[in-house]
Image (cartoon, rainbow, N blue to C red; front, side, top):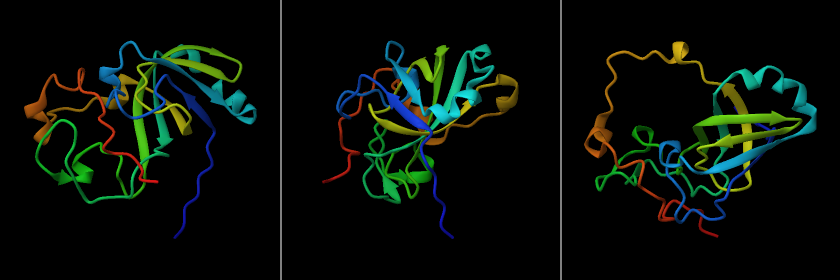
Length: 162
């Protein structure tokens, strides 16, 4: 089976390279950006401004080839890629929860960006806390890294080799 997606827009951020980029939105409090949505999708933005946060699904266009075992930024031990948020995945799809600032035409201004400038956007979904009401949450190996995500920055090791 083959699955093909077309980007619905482009995410613009201050991050031109992976080095120094936040590794998750929690570490990107001051990082603002915007989405340049393709004009054909402008009507799909109707009523979006009523939400404070959005999930962005995007293509990790600079991700290296998939690896089944990776050593993530927050640990020194190797883990299965599905137990991490590392970009070296079989399907390089990124997920970020960002703050919505405003919608103007086809431009969606956002805060807490943790992706490269020029990232192809696949979808936008509103964040609804009631939908995400997980109980008895376990965080696996990440539990030993509490608090590090806000200060951790990318060192560029998860980058596509040209």
